[in-house]
Length: 344
Image 1 (cartoon, helix red, strand yellow):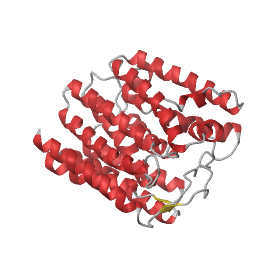
Image 2: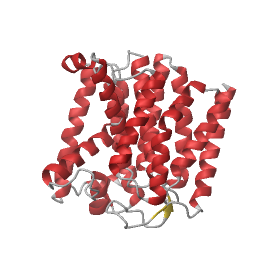
Image 3: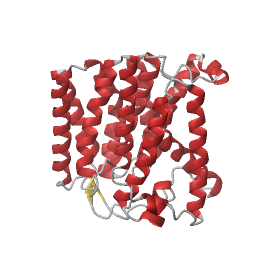
């Protein structure tokens, strides 16, 4: 117990202090207005992921979580490519996607865990074919990785989503007795918290692509380890925990391809969080707080239903209905009630 407490203190302190340090350096700075989704009003370092990576990696040593070090080996290819992108802005989206496939394949090779079932009979029959299951897992992990990058548009949003996800993954790990995964999730939570204290509300440092890809990959990997090492937990439980960024990505692809008839990789300012910020709340941290409140409610509901696949499936369908309804009303300027949520 003492070594775990030491790990938490080391992780939090390193992540917090490194975030402070990088925020003062002119390294990989984010420039306001350089892209449609850039709404941070000032130049800020994009080295937040590096601070979390170092803090968590060193913080794991006292707890001797040597098995979890393989997660950092897995994420390393996409993490390094993302750092390069944050510095030079010269990596094509297709290259980043390919490297995320590589990191996903390394994870599967090191752990031997992949998505073997989803609780739906027709789809499960396909997942019994190893090739299909492996390919599906690689695409699923890469999808979550890129989803966390898509929602990284407000101070504390992507990091806050990851923090809540790791807390609820850890709670489920505790319930099934997977103490190794529980410890790792708690350490990750403390690392993200150290970063968030510098990132939110003022945006002194940002996650950057390196941070968004890092936490997205680790959320996906921990979700697979939780479910397929402990088959009591429904595979839809971690999906509900990441459903906001995942559906945001899918809806954005639909919007860009079908509605706008453009490439799905083209950035725009029509994400849900961007519209809420620009049209109603108009304050970066308040918008994050509003979205996180709703996300926390859905995550808590998922936890109480963590063993019930069809109930969790219903939660996903309910989320889709609410998301689309709210999005349409925002587009038509009929969601003035959102302003009242900033008082929460």
